[in-house]
Length: 316
Image (tube, helix red, strand yellow):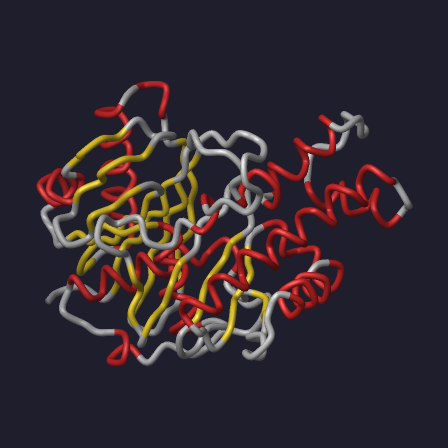
């Protein structure tokens, strides 16, 4: 293994976040670039490779690269099985990036990478669910200290569990999915569709209207809280977690969200005490830090050898 740092790239449907991270967990460089989805699959792969190569060149000695992406990911084979917003199917992304960069490359799922980072340097411990409530909802499950991907790489898709039988249609093709009702995008869409102020463009804006007494906001927010409690109760009874770490933009509602969801969860449980709900602390850097941890692993360095300190809420 050579190199004092690794490159981490967190790929989204619109933009990529890149960072250089050393063995102490210090982030020395942070950049963002467009993903370039409209230009096609090969262009996106080239953009990721060029971004990582530029970060590596600026950093000097680099040991490996970690790349995390949304969708269904086979992390063992390094294949992006399916990512609808990137147009990928069965893409051997790890091999293609490794050939381009000439260094070890780790490929992972963005939310599982975030869960990995929260468990090592953030709010998670033991067995826990990392649940970012953003444009969509996907969960990162950590079991016995290991992120769990499942048999097909789709483990953690709690956002597509049905919480209302025959409910509203979801983009995935099912009906009544948690994501339809409790994601930031779903909450905002439902508020406007029910006759709410069309100028509201985010879930926190819906919460502000809730606080002001808007009855439509009260209805859609209460529904989101109710189905989150239901989904988390199902998860709790199946996997018996130590805690649930809530992140993403909707979690910024803080005390306006956490007590209500905790109460909804508790109301669905009888013989099992509800697990604590705690806020994520890594913010929008969770994915990149997880990618960096995966990169160090690809370079032969395990997380317990890194000794990264835990970060407090708001730390960078």
